[in-house]
Amino acid sequence: MKTISLRRLVLGDVQAARMVPPSGFTAHLTVFAAGAMAFLAVFALALSLASGRLADRWGEELAGAATLRISGPAEELGARVGTALAVLDQTPGVAEARALTAEEQAELLAPWFGEEVSLEMLPVPRLIEIIAADPPYDIEGLRLRLEAEVPGAVLDDHSRFRRPLVDAAQALRRLGWLSILLITGTTAAMITLAANAALAANAQLIAVLRLVGARDGYIAQAFVRRFTLRAAAGAAAGTVLGVLAILALPPASEEGGFLTGLGFRGAGWLLPLLIPLLAGAVAWAATRSAARRRLRELG
Image (cartoon, rainbow, N blue to C red; front, side, top):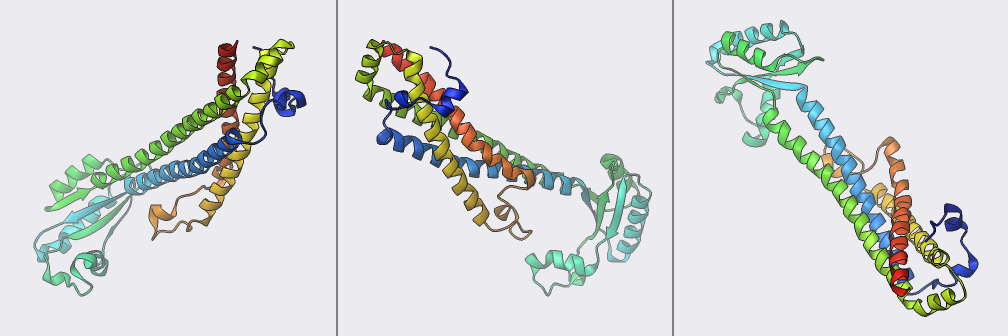
């Protein structure tokens, strides 16, 4: 069977196109399947991109910050905090080190102890916020020095919290791309079923065309073109609806976090334009394969 050229696919052949019913079960199935899958693909793509942004942001924010916790008798905490700040000022790779005020620590404890909490009533350690420079400091070397010079100092680089969060966001990103692959495979399967149904329904017409000298490539052209254009049109409609649904979501905010960050950013808005093209390519490959197989069976 000769390969169907792009020009013939776009322009088509009036006589050959008459073999494929312009409406009916196969037409509705192809358009609906492509549209529904494209709608889901928009959300899967948005989920994958948003998860990637989230993983990058969490990784950057947590990697650049650490907390130094200093415990001890109340009368010695001030001196220990001063010593720790002096050590941090002398440490290469530390951009900023700042001891949290009593009000800031009370605000951090408010969700657990209430707004009226008094730090004097609790054995609360003093906290120092550390911001890393570029390149960052040697975390292990700094930890050993602080343990030696500042009794009761514990350096927390947030790795216990950072890694699970970043891993979860990365898993969501992979899940989004896996969803797109499954959507593509489902679209191909649905279009293959519709093409097989159309070919089977026109088996007698195909036999007559062969008797009058029509080649298999000419016969397949009609089915490939019709189903490719149907799938592309359905996917275009589904993509538009998906993008409109994304636009209707709440805008990104710090309070909403990930739940309000689902969407596209910048040039990412161009990526949904590829979905109808991908649907058309999948339909072309699926229909062409189905047509070749069915024509061999009828041959």
